[in-house]
Image 1 (cartoon, one colour):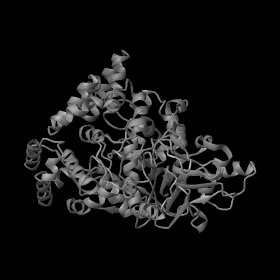
Image 2 (cartoon, rainbow, N blue to C red):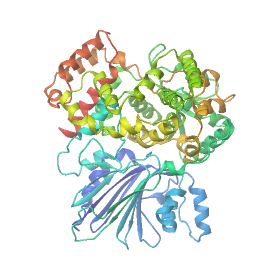
Image 3 (spheres, rainbow, N blue to C red):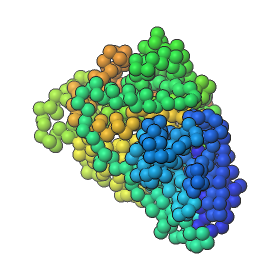
Image 4 (cartoon, one colour):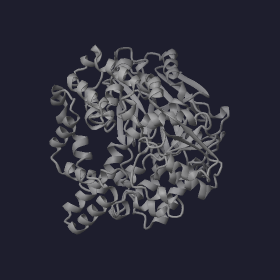
Length: 617
C-alpha cells in the first residue's frame, strides 16, 4: 500500500527529479516507510511506501525486472500472490523477494495485460517497458485504489492523489462545474472519469491504459490507448444456491485479506456488515485478540451505535473508541478537506477519518464493510427498485405483500417514495432533487441539469433490483472507496474490503430478489448466513446508520453558528454563483431554530467553500 506518481514529457525533455520529489512529499502520508525515484530521459516515476508484506528493503520501488527491461511502481495488495507465485514458478520464473510486488511484475512478464484477470486484490500500477518505450497502467475491478492523471500535448502527469498533481501543474486549477452540480444536487461524485478539476481526470475502475513514447517528438495524445478490461456484466457467475455457499465465499475472502506482516484490525460500526467481519474472524479464524475501532457519541445521540457494539464486549479483548464532536470537527476541517482533495457530501466520512486516526495508534491494516450495501441491496431506497420491478413485471400480489412487510418493519414511507421517484421521467428526477434543496442557483441549474445522464438515467433509471446493483458498482460505489482510501491513507493505514472479492461479487449480483430483499428486510442471504454467528440484536437490525454523526446538533452549537454565519456571509461564498445566498441564510436560520434538520446540505456548503479556498483560490 503506497503512493505512486509520475511524469512523461511528450516533447522529449528530461524530467526534473525535483518535480517528482514535490509530488512525493505531498503524499508522504501514503508511504512513510520508504521512497524511491526513477528518471530516464523523458520518463520519471516516484514512489512512497507503506510496508505491509515483506518489510525488508527487498520491497523497495521502483522495482526492476531481473533483466531491468521493466520498471514498476505499484499501490495496492495482490492477496492471491502466494498462489500466483507457485504458478509462475511452474513456468520457470524465480523470485528474489517475498513481496506481492515482484509477483505482480513477474505476472506481467508472463502474461502481459491478460494477467489482470488472474489478480485478486486492489491495485493501481504503472509499468515502463524500456525496450518498447511504452507505459502500461491499470486499476482494479471496482476502484478500490485511486489513479489520477493530467494530460495535454506536452506531458502526462499521474498520481495516487489529486493534490500531488496540482503541486506540479504549473498553473491555477479550474473548478469543473458538472461534478460540482452532481455533488450539490445528487450527493454523487466519481460516476464518470471527471474530477472536480478541469485539468485532472481519473482512470476509471476496471480500465487500463498504454502510452507509446516517442522521445523528441510532439504527442497530441493520439497514442494514449484506453480500454475497459473488466466489464462486470460479462463476468457475472451463477448465483449462490444457499446462505452457506455465500458464507464460505465471504470467509475465504476474509482469509485472503489476513495476509500481512503487520497488525490487522477492524473498523467496527456495530452494523450488519462490520459485525459479519468481526464474527467471521472470531468464528473461522479464532482472532480473539482482534483490535476493533469505533466512533461513538453518547447514548441517545444520532449515529451512536454503542448498544450494538457492546454486544461484543465479552468476545473481544481490544475494543477501542473515539468520540468525535463539534469541536474536533471544527479543528479538523482544514486537514480533512486537504486529505480528500475533492468535496465530500456528508460528515459520515469524517467519523471514519477519526476512526482511522485511532486505528493508526494500534495497527497498519484495517478491514472494512464497504461494498456490502451495493452488493446486497442494503440501502433503503433499494426497496424502490424492488417494488418497481414487481410492479412492472405484474407481480402485484407479491408487491402488496412486500410493501406490507416493509411498512410493518420500518414504519416509513421512504421505500414507497423511492418507488415513485424512480418512476418519474429523468428530467423530473433532476428538477425534484435540485429544488427540494431550496438553495441551488437557477442559472447554475439551467446550465447543467440536462447533462446528468449517468445519474438520472443509468443509476436512477435502473429497471430492476439486479440492474440497480450492477449500476451501483459501475457508477456509485467508487466514491465510497475513494473516501475510505483518503481517510485511511492520511493516517498511513491500509484499508481492505472483504465484501469486494470479485469471486463473491460476481455470484452475489446474480442472486434473485428474494435472496436480497425478503419480507421487508434487506441483505436476506447475509442475515440467513449469519444465524448463530452474529448476535441476534445485530443480525435482525432494521435500521441503518453506518458511520453516521449527530451533525444536526453540531451545526447548532455556538462554535459552528459563528463559523457557518461567517462562511455564508463571506464575499467568496457569494462569488461562486452556485447558490441562492438569501435562501442559504434562511435555511440555516431554520436549522438553528429547529424548524428543520438541514445539516447535510449545510455540510456541503462548508466543504465546498473550504475546497475552493484551499485548492482553487
